[in-house]
Image (cartoon, rainbow, N blue to C red; front, side, top):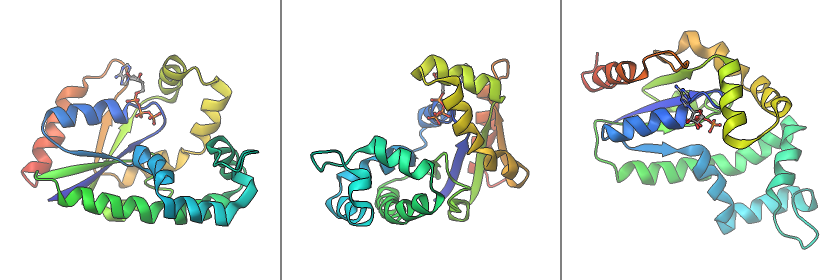
Length: 194
Ligand code: ATP
């Protein structure tokens, strides 16, 4: 069973496109969502609290995810430390999940494939490509995050654009593009080993 990574900048349409693959019967592992659940694991929680202490807790001593986000945004070393705790959990969870799947291939959705060097896990990669201005508009409509904040996040995701030449499958998800035929072509190519 092949594992295909799928990534793209914030608001590019990764999740929307993954839903189409799911309609084609392809299981999708939403790693960013699963990573958020890592804090429910007592061992992960313990490691996070031991490593960062009061930097990530509120006044009552409970984990404060907003503080974690603020901490890692301003400090790359701390981001690496946090990733070193969370990623092994996600990797194990993914392995368990994969064993339960029965399909010619599966998708692993993540916004941070290249930052984390995950691309080596995959038989192939898909990048969902959308003009930055459209992504910004979509995220603004969806979540009400400010344009400044969205652009700040996009700046952190330039690595995706830099890696596009290395990626086999690009889905153009600009507003006026025909996305379904692209998905079907990629699906057929993966299934037929083209
Ligand atoms: P994030 O990384 O922030 O989770 P994402 O890459 O998974 O984002 P989606 O959540 O799939 O992106 O899409 C972002 C928004 O854009 C959603 O509201 C979705 O409905 C919309 N959207 C996705 N594709 C298109 C498209 N081709 N045309 C217009 N809107 C779209």
